[in-house]
Structure formats: C-alpha cells, structure tokens
Amino acid sequence: MKQKGKWLEWLAAGVLTVAAFLFFLFFYPYHNLLKEQMILFLNTQDHFISYLEKPAWLTSYAGDLLTQCFIMPAGGAILVSLALLSLWLLFRKAFRSFGMRPAPASAVAAIPVAVEFLFHCGLHYPLGSTFSTLLALCFFLLFIRIRNRHLYIWLFLPVFALLYYLAGHGALLFTLLWLVSGLIRSVKNRLPIFIPALLGMLIPLLLRPAFLLTPGRAYTYPVKAPLSLNISFTWEKILALDYQTQKGNWFKVIYLAQQYGMKNRVASYYTNLALSQSNLLGDWLFLFYQPGPGALFLPVSQQSTPLTIAFSNEVFFRLGDMNMAQHSAMLGMIFSQNHRSSRLTKRLAEIHIAIGDAPAAGKYLGLLEKTLFYRKWAREHRTLLHATDVPLREKIPSVDTVRLADDYVNALEILLKSNPENKMALDYLLCTHILRKDIPAFRETYDKWVVRETETVPGVYAQALIVSLYREGASDDMLQKYGIPTSVINHFMEYTNAYQESGGDPEPLQEMYGNTFWFYYHFAMLQE
Image (cartoon, rainbow, N blue to C red; front, side, top):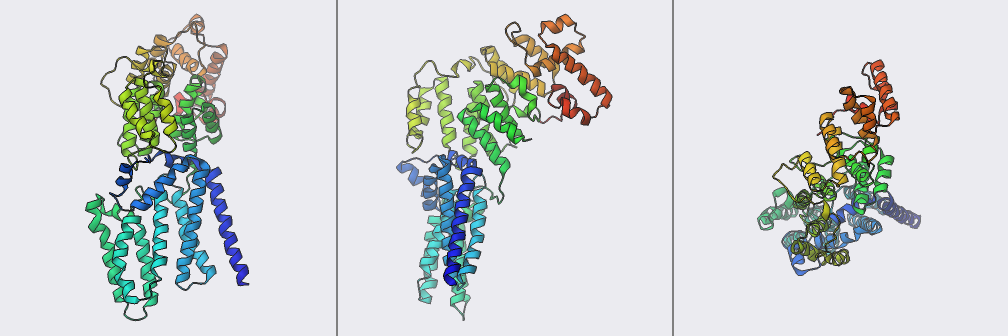
C-alpha cells in the first residue's frame, strides 16, 4: 500500500511537471522570451565580477546564464518546469525531516511550488530567484546532518552570511527551516535557538550599504520588481504582438490582433504599426480598437512603465526618427530591471548603423559579440558599418529641431519635409489628425502631401474627407476631384440619416457603422 502511494505521488509530480512544461511552451511562451530579451549576459571576466558586487551573486549568475536559453520557447519551458520539480523534491525532503509522513509532505511541498509557478508567470521574475530558494534548501538539508546541538547553533551565523552572499533572499528561507528544525530538536531551553536567528536577520541590514541596496531590496534580492501572483493572458497576448513585430511578421500581428480583439492601448500600438507596414492603415484603422491618438505612439513620461518605454522605440525606428528611437531605447535600457538588455542593445546598434555612426554601432556590436546567441547577428551587422545602402537611412531627416518628446505632429512633419515619399510618416500624420478628430488639420495635411493623381484614396481617409467637404458644401465635381468613391458617399448619407433617426444614440448604429470614422467622430472618448 505504501509502495502504491509512493508511485502515485511521483506520478502526480511527473504529470504536473509535464503540464508546466506544456503551459510555458504552448500557452505562455512570450513571458519567457521577454525575460531573455531584458538581460544582457556577457561571457567576460568583468561581467562575472559585476555579480560579485551584490548578494545572491551565485544564483543570479547561474540564473542569467541559463536565462539566455529562454530565447527558444522550449528552453524556457524546460528550465522552469525542471526548476519547479527540483523545488518540490527538496521541499518534500525538508518537510520529511520535520517528521511528516510522505503523502502530507508531498502535498504541503506543492504549495510553495505553486506559488513559485505563479511568480514565474509574472513579467520580470528571475530564474535566479528560484535558484536562490533551491540553494537555501540544499544548505538546510546539509545543515541538519549536524547532530551536535551546540555546533548546530554556533555555525548558523557564518552559514547564514555565506548563504546570503551566494543566494540573497534564500537565506531567509534557510533561517525559517533551521528555526523549525531546531525547535523540534530542542524540547527544553529553546531560547538559544531564537537568538542566532534574530541576529542573522540583521545581517542584510548591516551589509546593505556595501551592496548599495535599500532595506527592502536587501531582504528580497535578486527579486527586483514587485511580485505578481496572477497569470496575465492579457500581457501574454501583448507580448505575442510585440514578438511578431520584432520579427517583422506584420500579417501575423494583424491576424493575432483580429483573434484577440483586445481593447488595450499597447495592443492598438502594435496593430497600427503592423497596418502601416502592410500599407493598410488608411483602410483598416477602425477595424480595430482605437482609444485615440495615443494608439499610434507610446509616451515616454513619468506615467510610463519601464516596459512600455522599452516598446516605444519600435515606431520611431521604422518611421526613421532615429533621435527619438535612440532616446526611447536608452531610457528603456536605464529603467529596465537589470539596466541592460540584449534587445535594446541590438536596437541601439541598428540605430547607429542607420545614421552612419560606425564607432557607436561598433561599441554595441562588440557587446553582442560577447554573448552566446547574438554573436552571429553582431558579426553579420558589422558588414553594414560602412555600407551606403542601409535600409531606413533615406527616411532619416536631414534637419531637426528642438521639440518636446510627445510633439508627434511636429516630428512627423519634419520627416515628411525631408522625405515626402515617407509613406509611413504620412499615414501616421493623417491618422493622428483623424484620431484627434481634427478635420481641418487632416484636410490641410492631405492637400499638402497626398498626390491624388497617382493614389486611390483609402477608405478611412475618404470618410474623413467627405466630412470636411460636406462642411464646406462641396460640389459633386469636388468630390470627384478627390476621388471619393460613390459607395462612400452613399454610405455617408445613410449614416447621417441613421444618426438623426437614432437621436444620437450609439446603440442602433454600432453594428452597421461601428468601424467607420463617422461613428468614432461622434462617440469615441479620446485618450491622449
């Protein structure tokens, strides 16, 4: 019977490990992919020494070393699931040392493992933190082999200090387990057990000035971000759009946006970027959720999160506004959890290659050449350092001016003045006016920059144009001059009649006209 129960425990552990692996591989891969992008692990002596300047240097170094393998979805899934299984085995052994029976020990051990699983579902939880817990459990299981009570107590403080330097917050778990084990051992005179534990808890505070840590960080290192215990499929979907954007899979981004149907500003940002790259922005803008002009750019401000700041450079880079792209990428690097990122280092290299700054580009490529998975990419891009036909270079404005970071209209106008054939800049400028419901500015921009003889007016632009022309009482000849299709004119008249009949109620108009500029103009609440 006992043998059968043991097999059932191991079977359950195996099934849950496989389930965790499949979850992170197929249902939640993009969180791990992001974690890899937000570190920059260099195979250099100086990089190794930088870990020695903080507690948890061993677990942080090992965690970041293996986090590089998160670049492959299967790599992240394997490492996390195996780490969780190891955690369960060690916790089970620790609880067994307290005298618990095998089945209860297995069940109780599953609780901290479940919590750790939820931590790994967060955006920034490091693998090194799990390694800190694993190392603490290993230290405890070795420590309880000491049978001499006095040695058990007197060795605690030096072991705590060593473990804190190696595993950071793992020393706290070690203290808790050591305390429980000591109390179980000592039936009489338990006070000497508490004194070393209390003294040990002061060690992080005493060492924090040397490690340049706040009191809170001294006890939680290497965890650097607020912990989250929820599985966010909203963020997983956003990260899927982000990942496909980095790969340039624009139709995949559009397809995913259609599948998700998200009402989220960051999702709209990536969707609009994909539409512009597919030359569909002027036609499909209102087929997707648009919260306002903020759907075209992610602001870099005090209200921004480090992650959205890191994302914000994507649109500037593809527009050709390399000054703002560099600004966003540098701030993204500064405000990231580790203040270094392989993803943003690559982007900074691409920016400096585009503007022809070979020394600066060479600096970033040199960093990437010291990594495991980006060295090939860096070597390939070194061939572009002195190339003349670099993509995006023709979009870079020849002049610039002092402007606010969120003065997007001025930035887009500068891009168009330098290169009137910058179609993306024109689309973004027209759509900025549309999403702001600024019809006069849209009309002025359209008349100034759009070549009517060679271009068919996109659907959304036609809808905005007919509003402007209707206001000034334009003739049929004028409508024909702008190339507005008869179908759009008829649709506009139908909408006008339906709007009047509804008395301004959006409900009866939603199904038929919800994806038109006219419906947006009347009912959308703008978000800057």
